[in-house]
Image (cartoon, rainbow, N blue to C red; front, side):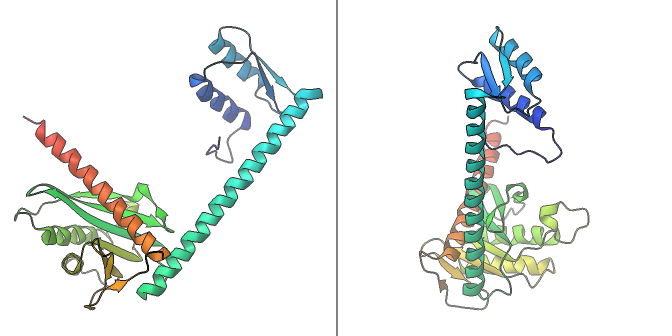
Length: 273
């Protein structure tokens, strides 16, 4: 088990809280719990587990013999697991850095796009139209920065107008001092789900909000073509390239979020009198 613990938190309190959650769903509670010899959690653990078990539970610090060897083995295993986990995370971060560098090179960006935003539209004809804004930071999803828009456009099922509206509304909030952290952050790359038409509409929306200079591309599903402003021919990325995988990942995530928001609006609308 890997716990997200602040450096200032007391180790004994963390251990007791973990035991509280773990043994809340455990099939059985043992009569003996062996602790590291320096642990201060013994009395609190004994009280907690005795109450849960309905019979006495001993929480004993392992000071010698087999139980000490057992506790030391558990500690070594935990440290090994933590080191392995750190290595996996570092390798994943390295792969994401390489993917962003690949994206910079293939799209001729001024810098690796540390913050990428992707937009998608979801609707059912003229009703319940929504847009999603999905954010990747450092090549990984930043879910706390995801946002959704309920479309105000009422001119029929026009995805181009809706994309223009979504980007205009997002760009207008870029420099709003009262904005939340996600809208206040300037992206290094904007990705639009769609082809040339959606890309042109997004650029129009940003221009209407007087926001310029942010790199923007669109990703068309059929052949996974990447369109850039002012270029008639698409960029065709190799199917195995890290750059394309990043674009596909954020595009698929934007589609998922938009569809979820759309379904939520539709379900609420269908059950409202």
